[in-house]
Image (cartoon, rainbow, N blue to C red; front, side):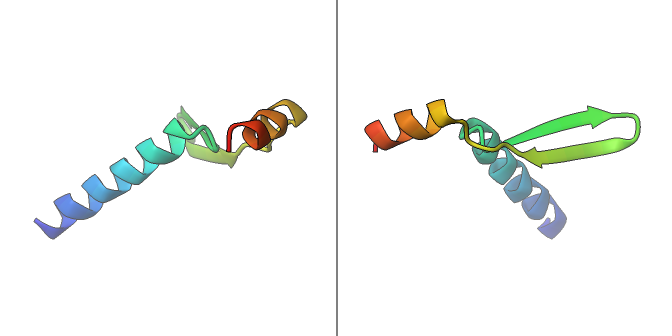
Amino acid sequence: MKLKDVVNDTAERLHYMMKKENYTVNLDKKGVDVKKLRPTKHTIKWGAKNH
């Protein structure tokens, strides 16, 4: 049961990070590639207005 809880918790964290659009995840034959997205001037501007 502990392994199931760890996998479930990891999946929830990954879903939360993807929902906030801070990271992008690419799946291919080589494996999983996770990259952090850099904010653009447009997202910085709207993030400041919607705080």
